[in-house]
Image (cartoon, rainbow, N blue to C red):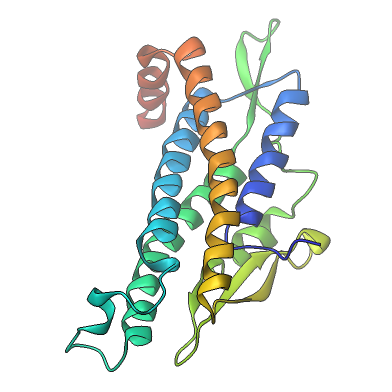
Length: 220
């Protein structure tokens, strides 16, 4: 059984959301879909940085060993990787909020205006609990004086009542770090594919006028 990785929960919640969207007869509000695309693009970039920058180092690299600012190569690795993770955490929290905020539009021919419907995640989450839990969500940070990544992950077994659980990922050897990187690159590839799918939908179905008109309505 595959141990949950750094970004697995992000992918799973994203897939759940889009499965619901595809099975619905309704359409997502266009401005929210556009905001989601931008947020997804941002997290994919930050997740790429986490994986490709410092995660899978051997601790024998010259730029790690020859340093006067740190006591050890491991200390520098931990500090730089935590900075990458901190930037990713901020973007991911914003993205998960965008997923939560998604809502459908339905056109009522009799009334002649749009009625905001429920969102694709309504059956899975308690919005109040989920919103509160997101303040504690994290892709993870390396614990002090260790090579263990501690992550506040989405708890899919109790999503409505207890949406967040804490998990630990062992990065104590190069082989383990490399394995995690390879596994998470597969996850990132799937997130990138979803981003391209959303982009294609926006190009085909949404105009600048659609977005501008919504923004004008919001200002009234």
